Image (cartoon, rainbow, N blue to C red; front, side, top):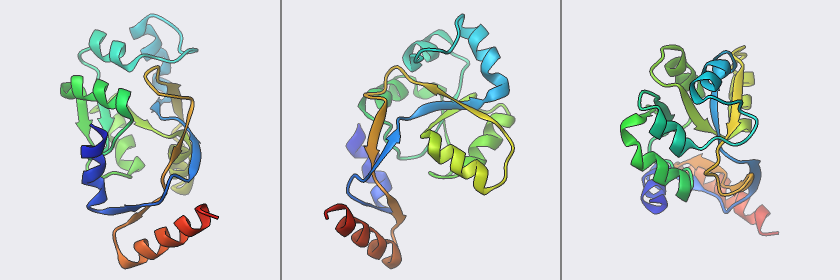
Length: 168
C-alpha cells in the first residue's frame, strides 16, 4: 500500500532521508464541529478515536485525503477499506483547499500533521480554529518524516544539502 502511494508522489517530489520528528497524523476538523462529532459517536474525544470504527458506524462521513499520500500502513488500510467515504483533494499540500471543502460540507475532516495545519493557517492569516483528534490506528504518538521539495533542479539541490546535514 505505502510503496504504491509514495511512488505516485515521487514522480513530482524529492524526499530527504527521514529527518523531522513530528506529532503523528491527526483528524483535523473545525473546532466548532467538535461537539457535533462527540454527539455522533456518543463520547468525548479525550482518547484516540478509531477511524475504522468511525467510518464503519457513520457511512455518511466523508474524509479528505491527499492524492498519492501514504498515511502509514494501518491508516492506509482503513482508508482503502472505506474508499467510498474518502474525497481526494486536488493537490497534496493545499490546506486552504481542505478548509474550503470542510466549509462547503464536502468533507467532515481531513488527516494532517498538526504543525503543518497550524503553519498554513498562520501563514495565510486564517482565523479558522482547527482541532486535532488523535487517531487510534496510528503506529505511534510521533513519527520521523521526510522533508519534501518539488522535483526541479533547485529541489534536488536542496534535498541533497539536507541529506548531507542529516548524515553529519
